[in-house]
Image 1 (cartoon, one colour):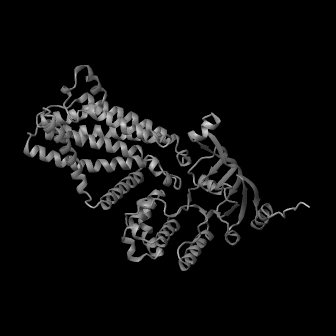
Image 2 (cartoon, helix red, strand yellow):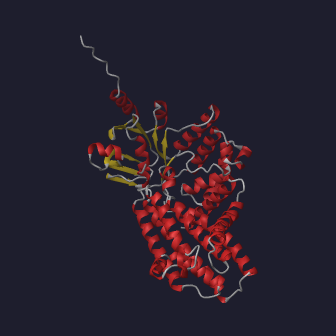
Image 3 (cartoon, rainbow over the protein chains, first blue to last red):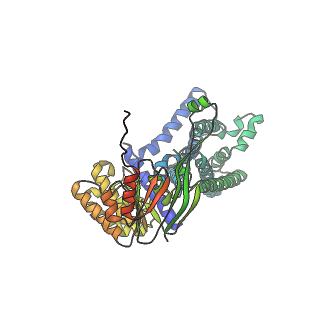
Amino acid sequence: MKNMLITLFFYTRAKLEVESYRHFAGIFWWVLDPIIGVAVYYLMLKVFLNHQEDHYIQFLFIGIFAWKWFVEGITRSSAGILNNLTLIKKIRIQKYIFPLIEILNVTWRFLIMFSIMLIALYLFWFPLTIYALTIPLILLAQFIFIMGLGLFLSSFIPMFPDLQFLLGHALRLAFYPSCILFSAEKLPSQYQFVLHMNPIAGLVQSYRQVILAGRAPLWDVIGTAAIVGIFLGALGLFIINKYDKDYPKLI
Amino acid sequence: MLIDLKGVGVCYHRKKSISQASKTNVIRERLFWALKDITFSLNQGEILGVLGKNGAGKSTLLTLLAGIIAPSQGTMVSTKKTCLLSLQAGFEPFLNGKKNIIISGLLLGLTYEQVKSKILEIIEFSELGEFIDEPIATYSAGMKARLGFSIALHLSPDVILIDEVLGVGDQEFQDKSSKALKNKLKGDMAAVIVSHSKETIMELCHKCIVIDKGVSVFQGKVTEALAFYDELYAVKPIKLAQ
């Protein structure tokens, strides 16, 4: 177990190093990428379409950051086993390590960016309230949710690689009702149930309630996200374990 | 007994592509038996040679013994940690040599401390010198092979499985590496060697099996196995019609 954790952390660190080495601007992209994303949406929605929302830039930053963490974590971890089949055919190894490396990698980058953003928000715009202490809990719930869903998807995507195409569209579909670009009230009441089915929407709303309004987060969503995450993760580990000797036979 | 196989077979599921399936109007999986009936055993300190033609199932057998895949039929008992001597598996091209040594070791299931204690030996054997701190992507093919071999040689566990690689690199390093591996094998090591080189098999192995189309057709002494193999695939004179 201890050795597994060391392997996981060493490998994740190595991958991070590789990624910053491969691109000219290295870690600057980590910072630049979400900022460009926010700029594009701000230009589209605020400037062109005159979308009304208080503190829209700060609002967007929180949404985009949380979404990027989720979507990158899921996209990369779901292909974790599939992309390492060549190695899996040569070495006997715990397969769950591959999706986990991807998630840790994305999470590490997210946490750095998120901390910078948090400091800036509290320093320049919003008063620090007691509810700021709940931020780590929201983060933990989202982490568990990403890990669970990632492990679950990675367990069967090697057998059905075509699902990767569908996953991309499913994630894009989930983007709009996740309250990234607009607040929950903007959605007509007959469609509000979509938001309740989507843990990411609740988590994003929680970040905003705590940071922008200084209010309590949505406790029920935090609980649900963590429980669903644990359930999916356990299911994923079960499938990965069951097909441990069959992944190397895939072409 | 370290390894014991009785009537072992390995089956691969091959999906038909849609174009193939439409011709027969049936979409179903095609089964392919890479190994059908393999029986042999390996004891401590023994080196087993595996003879067979291309596609006979030798590499599948090694993957099976390494615990990477499981038998579809028959029984297999394996009591010690086995490992395929796979050179350069898991190399990250943009990381330097040292970090790749650690990653390879961790992937092979060793602890961080175990890898650390061997790292100087590995670097010295690979003769890479200061290149060890450069990213592997800058290495020549020979340098990469040397590093891969040194890692495999120093970090491999109780039972080694070897697929045709006894020496790598230029002539000088090839001699050195095959000598080092042979020395290691001649200690109290158990190993399974797949090789087309009769000299290698003669020199290293204590016993041999012959595999033909996934079936172990012979098991016994090395000289007898080689003779059996020659007879099995002897070029038969073609009869000309008169």
